[in-house]
Amino acid sequence: MRRRSQHWAVGLLMCLSLVGLNGCGGGGDSSATPRLTVADVVVTPFEAEVLNDSEDWLELTINFRLAGDMTLIAKPDALFVRVVDPNGVFNHLQLTLDRQIGSGEVWLGGLPQGQAPGLRQGPLTVSFCLDADCQTPVGNSISVPYKVRIMQALNVNGSASTASGITLDGLFGSTTIPAVLSIILPEGTTSWTASGETPLVRAQSVVISTPPPLTDPTSVSVDTLASSTPQVALTGQLRQVGEYYTYLVVTANFTTPSGDMRQTSKWFPVHYVVHPSDQPFVADPPGIALKLGAGIDSTFTILQILTPNALRDVRVEYLPPDGSGNLDAGDQLWLWMDSQDLYAPDQWYRTRVGAMRCNVFVESETYCLAPGRYEALVHISSPQPDGSGADIGVPISLTVNP
Image (cartoon, rainbow, N blue to C red; front, side):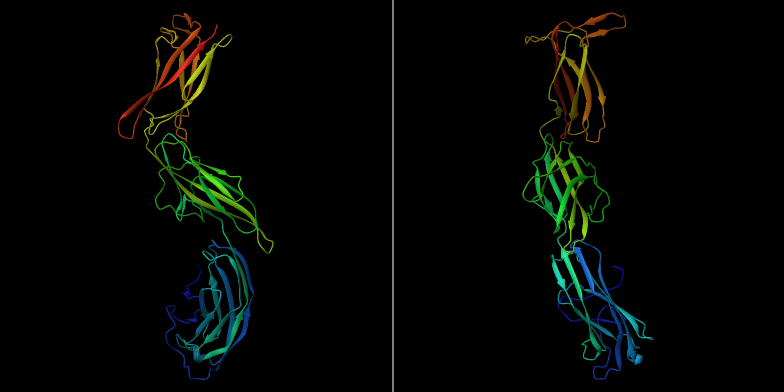
């Protein structure tokens, strides 16, 4: 607020002393005939259309001049202001006055934040008095017209939504069940969008008291649902065990009842927690089948691996014949791997997994695989939440056609 203020309750007649804003304590002679009048009053009619999450003050000012015996207001606590606003829109006030020349200003303020939507119309009345009970008024009361339309602001509603934000809980190795949230839009909305965003300092966002340990805008997907009422679905994605923060950002374009076209955006904090599970890792795909044939001597595909914590080791094991028809490649290392995006923001370890028909050794001898099927395992070693280690294999098969 830009001024020092005195709060007064809706529907009550309260006052503000000229000096000292902590109450209306004594002063003034209720039995005296006032020898002051209020002159040169300037009041500008006030109109506004605001959302009920706005933190901007609604402000009214009344400029005036007192004429007559200035000695009546020479003492502290000698002039009082009484305001009656049946709608309770303007519930803060402040009086400034030059006691020597009698000119002054009454400032009235109100915050639309938290007020119910609807139309509020004045007038409110302002009276000057020489006593706290206003038994000795100074001049006539001033009527102040106003018209304030308070409109519903953007909001979300759903089981995952609380006053402090949106919370999702999931288990490692799977995505969460989509949390469906209803979007409350301003009256006159013509279009709206919803998306996820990395946490930043936002004027309309809920403050997170402690810095988030991880910030990942893609940890939660945001999908707009095709329904009769505005809805979005939030789904926690595959991530390592831990906590993630992002924002649901909703933007609406709307037209006010007076015809003004406006846009409003709001950021709702999302807290996504991934808990440990019995699943040691996630591989995408869970198994790989490679093929070589006529004119194709090498091939590869991408293997993605997600572990609960840090990835410790990746190694290859070639499998010997086991009666299922796979062949023995001998000393030929037909499988190759190279890491890609090891420290990708989404925490997936990515590697190209490929196969070659022929190997050229130092002695310049070339060894090629005979037609048939060959098998291997890509071993993934990763620490588990209980402190143990896990060594799981992703099956790889290679078919060599003539």
